[in-house]
Structure formats: structure tokens, C-alpha cells
Amino acid sequence: EHGDQLVVFEMHACLSEDEVMGRPHDLVQTAGRVHAALVDHATPNTERRWNERLKSIEDQLKTTTLWRAPHTRHIVGLPATHFSLDGVVAVDDELMLVPRPRPLVDHLMAEHERLPGVSVIAMVEQRLSMVEGFASSESREAFYRAWGEVVPASWTSSTSLSTANGGVWIWRYEAMLLMLAEARAYGLKKQAKQCDRWLFDVSRIQARLGELRTVHAVRRGGVLAALAAGIIGSGPVQIPFVLASMGVALAAHLVHQRRMPPPF
Image (cartoon, rainbow, N blue to C red; front, side, top):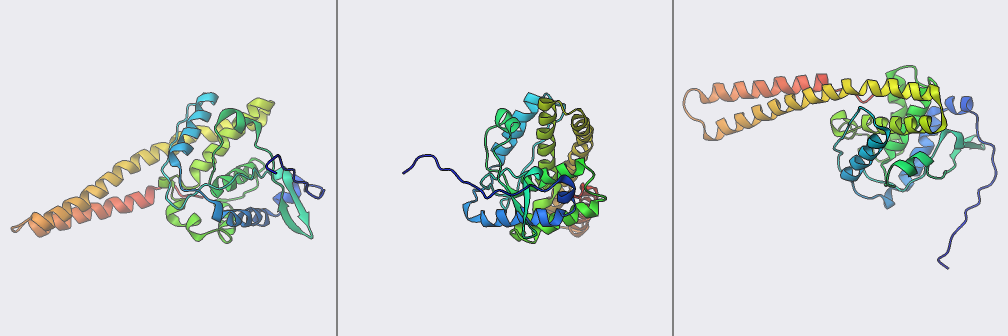
């Protein structure tokens, strides 16, 4: 009664790489419909475990990169599906995704975790980008917006996608680490070079985020100073001090918004 279970799928020929690349929005919306169906089985944000997973992969690859991120409460874990570009079929011209076993490198390098839907989409995006599947940042944005049309709106809100909150970039980073591990395991030299080039640019993004943490501290300090002056201040300097503090906070906010690496 509680033994192993076997699922048998009807046999379909998988689509070629060119056929899949020709329908990126259909592909991502198919994945999104699966994610939406799994919402009732979602588990809360486990950012500590997700960050520990990243550390495990980094340590074993001995990369020079290190990236950790917070996540909003809207980023939730979903049951694993392990979709891949070589497991896409068409039934009556509608795309279907065939669940695959957990990839070997993932199994060897990290504990199994329930990851958010955006992690799957980031992996698909990075796979497509390896074969020049995106012509511009606008095409990447359209790719994610297509996914956002069929999943809960909070998953693709500006806060959830903000790079300061991990957003898309942290999952692109994990996808690239796993693809580098795959390339090393199977001797895929071209893929390894592509991954190394991408990871080389991570330090630039992290340096920008480091600057923005300082700017955020200035922004917060300006607001707190204005509040404190408004509550306990007195005399002729009170109003100028409040205005000056709010001006500093506003300037820092504008810098923070302008310098934040965009998600796409």
C-alpha cells in the first residue's frame, strides 16, 4: 500500500533545441502553470538554507565568488520538478514539460531543498542565454513577464525581483554555478568558459550592492534624524535641521534607486 510508485508517461518525441528556442514564452508559461498548480503545496521562505546551499556549491567548486541574499516572504519553496530544455514535448501544438530526475551535480554538491519557481526560470533563462536565446534586456524582461502572467503577482513584484532582495540575480548565479559544475563533470569546455566569463562579472554586481548598502544606511539615518529632531527638537534650528535631514534621505533614496542593478 505504501511501497514504491511508478508513473508511466505516454511516449512523445522531445522537441529540438531550435524548436524550443522558437517558443520561449510558451515554454515559460507552461512552467508557470505548473508552479501555479503547486502553490497550495508551497513552504515558507527558507533563505538561510538557500544561502547554505549556495555556500556548499561555492566551496566544492572553489570559486572566487561569494554571494548571499535575503528574500521577501513572497518567495516560497515549491516541490521539485527538474524541468530541462531537452524534456519539452508538444501535444496538439501545446508545450508540455516532462519532469526529470534530480541532476547528478545537484545531488552531489548540495542538499535537496524546495526552491522557488524563479530559480527554475532563471536556470531556463541561463540555458537559453548560452545559445544566444536573448537579443536584449527587453527580451529577458518579456520572458519573465510571460511567466508572471500565470503565477501569483507577488512573485514578480518589484520588491520580489529587486536585486537588493536577491531577486532574479541570485538565482541566475546559482544556475551558473550548477552549469559550471556540470561542465567540469562532463568535460564541456565551451560551457565552462561561458560560465567562468559570467561569474567573473559577479564581483562588479557585488561591489555595486556594497555601495548601495552604505547609501541605504545614509537614507535611513536621514529619516531617523528628521524624526528625532521633529519629536525632541526645539528652537529656531529645528525646522531647518528636519528639512536638511529629509533632503539627505531623499537624495540617498534617489541615488539608491538609480544605482540599483536592474533585474533584467
